[in-house]
Image (tube, rainbow, N blue to C red):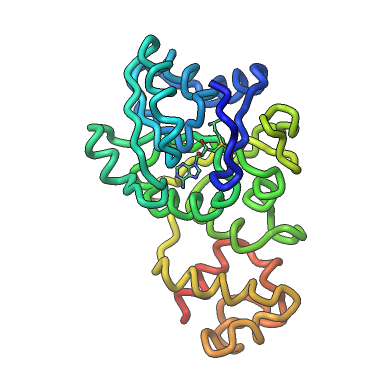
Length: 259
Ligand code: SAM
C-alpha cells in the first residue's frame, strides 16, 4: 500500500472514501456483471467493486503495483489482472475471452491519455454495456457540451455520435494522493443501440469533424474546402456560413455522407 505515485503513469490515487462509495454506487455492479477496470492502481475502486461483483478484470500498466493488488484482492474475490497498456487491449476480444456479451468498464483514468482511451473504447462500443470514468472536469465538460457552447468540439461530437454522455458529479483535488492541479468529474457513457448509431462511414465522419473544428472561427465553406462544396452544404439544409460549433452531431454525418 501507499506506493510512491508515479507521475509518468498519471498516478493520482483516490483516498476519500465518500467519493469511492459514490463511484461504486453509480456503477452499481451486480453479481454476474463482467466489470473491467482500467488502471486499478492500489485498488481504491477495485476492492469495493470486487466485493460486490465477486469476479472482475483490471488492466494495469505499472508492474510494481500488480503483486500488492493481487494479494489484497485474494481475500475478497477473483481478480484477473492484465498487465498491459489499455490502448493495446482489444475489448471485443476480451469480452469473448471472458464469455461476456458486453463489458462494464470503469476507471479513474490516467489523465495524460484520457482522450485516446475514450476513442479506443468507442471503437469497441458494441462490446461495451456502459463506462464510468473519472476524468479532468474540463474534459467531461467538453464531452457533454451542446452545440453553441464554447467547449463544444471534436470530442463532444465524436462521443455523442457513439454514446449517451451523462456527467455525474465533481471530485475535488483533495480526494486524491497526490492532488491533481485541476478538478475532476465522474461521467457515465452508455453506447447507443445499433439502430441509433449514425449511418455513415466512421473514417469520413472523423475527417469532416476534424476539418470542421480545425479552425473554429472559420465558416464551413472554408474549413470543408476540398471535402464538401458550398452548394452541397446548402442542399443538406446547413448554412455554409455557419461555424462547426453551431452544428448538431447529426449534421456532421450528413456532411460526411456528402463527401
Ligand atoms: N484506480 C486507482 C485509484 O483510483 O486510486 C488509480 C488511478 S490513477 C489516476 C491511473 C492508473 O492507471 C494508475 O494505476 C496507472 O499506473 C494506470 N495507467 C497509466 N497508464 C496506463 C495505461 N496506458 N494502461 C493501463 N493503465 C495505465
